[in-house]
Amino acid sequence: MSVEASEFRPTSKAEVAWLGTEPIPARPYYDPDYFELERRAVFMRSWLQMGHTCELPEPGSFIRRELEFARASILIMRGQDGKVRAFHNVCPHRGTRLVDEVQGRRSRFSCRYHMWTFAGDGRLLSAPDFEQFNISKEQCGLPELPTAVCAGLIFINLDRNPSQGLQEFLGPIGEELESLAVAKATTFTEYVYDIDANWKLVYDNFQENYHLRFIHPRSGGGGIGPANPFGYPTGFTFHGLHRKQCIWNDAAAPVHPVQGSAFAKAAAGASARGILGGPHARQYFALFPNFFILGSPITHFSHTVYPLSVDRSRGVIRLYWVGEDSSASERFAREYLTASMRDLHAEDRAVIAAGQQGLSSGALEHIHFQTNEVLCRHFYHCVDSRVQRYRDEQSGRG
Image 1 (cartoon, rainbow, N blue to C red):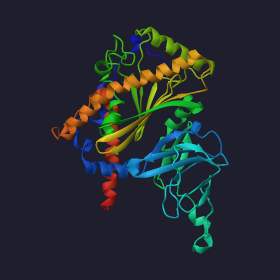
Image 2: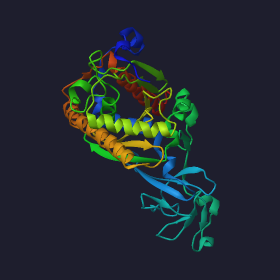
Image 3: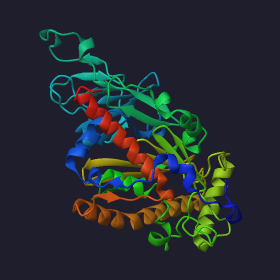
Image 4: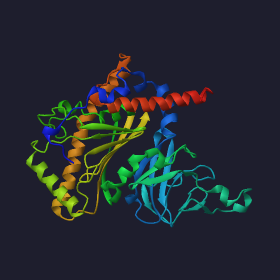
């Protein structure tokens, strides 16, 4: 859905007044104690997006993910029954990491230390001299984690008994995600970056358009036009812990000829596969706590921000595609769009890191969000409410 320049109407203060207008405390963006509370209250208790089912195309396929904030290695695999499961990547015997490969395909997994061997559903199949242990094989399966799939996206929860299932957690957004082309994705392009900044500061940058005109003049700033020089969204929607914005686009905005050609080729490929357009083609979904996905059927763009420490984060950006390249032109289009996205985000990283330097100095007690940064304000309140609830639990008030 493209919104013409003449149709643009900025969001009014009254529409988002329910979120408040007060300054936001700066300390949560650099305080190690607050980060530890976030780690426990948010990341150890939330549904986290970890990959896509296209990475597990057949029984025995597996991927490994390292979650530094949890000091955990996660093994995600498709069992012989076709079900996707996630396990801690540790042998229950003595805790040795079971799998070192990033991805692959196996019918069974054996620990190199003492050769305990497991099936794709986590069951212990065999162990040398197992009769010498005073336990049963049923007690020695791989430690399994809650796992669920929505729109082909794989989610896990580090809490063995989460308070909500994934469907309840996502609410109505889950059905909207299922309508996106990412649900049909068969492959993807990925790039990863590390940055010296708090995960919230990184996340905030990508859920506000206030900076577009200033930071992205070379890359076009996301379709900014005269009627909307800041490229502000056409509206915001909130669903519990999650939020959306509708990306504004001026169809008449000038583009570089090569860029125009790449978009046309990519759009033609999407149209041929029957995935062009759709009710959420310009919707930018921000899922709590750390995942974005843009509903565009051409690029299938997603972005996950992982905390590494209080002032260091890792971003994983993916462009999902439906089908393999059908021609050299389509291959060019995909490579060009990937390079363009990478360049766009490279423009952001230096200014984000500079912001962290300023906040970490302790010079500011507060930071400020304006009306069109309302997603950042909502995000902060959601994180802080989880932190305060956790504090209450630990003090016996919960």
